[in-house]
Length: 334
Ligand SMILES: [Zn+2]
Image (cartoon, rainbow, N blue to C red):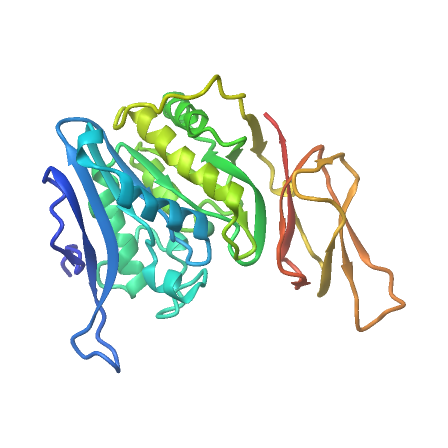
């Protein structure tokens, strides 16, 4: 088997100027025998300098990143750039067109499909192309996520705890530069699951993600955090000049999610009732949610309590829950 990607493009990553085109993924199907799937991509480059890869729509029902990256492609010109920006508004384009987390073609979760396979499903082929063609040429990667249909977040920049102190230092510097009101250092609940994050970090790259809003909506404040954050990271990397700011930015809050017990899950089927607004302060032992049993009205609701002090950083957006559904994440102080 060849390891070469089957994804083609007329975009030349080595050219200067502004190119807007498509990644072309072969997709022979009932309605299109010799058909392809098109994933919009732009490269904006001038002179020598670092490469920043900015992606949205890794999950199709997360919209702030998709809109902010499209805006970046419309507004960024080569004359403003020293180095290179590679921008993809909807990395899992079929999922973005369907407004779903997963690909409607193969059910694939792109952010659980890395490193992917050149001969795999559509989703796996996209992961493989990103892993073998885009991640290796990028110095900084910003992959913009939101809560999707099922979760909602306090709009946040996100990075992971890393083993190498120098790698960690560079990553936290970029996270602080992103400049969200809240930044979170996360230990992933399932780090071996094939995330783009891990694939980039294992290559020694500075990798940032976000959690911006959610609930399947496009949040106004969350979109502003995304748009400002992209520009801030490009300036931090030295690819664009920093925008003149009206004054010193208030320092953002730095929080951590360092313990699987900070993810609180339903233990029964029912309706999730939040007891706190997003962003609320939480004390250990405090009830943060209830599961209500509509078919058994006399049954007491199941109370879900936080095991930690912190902030209600994330909560469920959908009301119906099954056992194992995460209904709240409590982030702790730095
Ligand atoms: Zn996501």
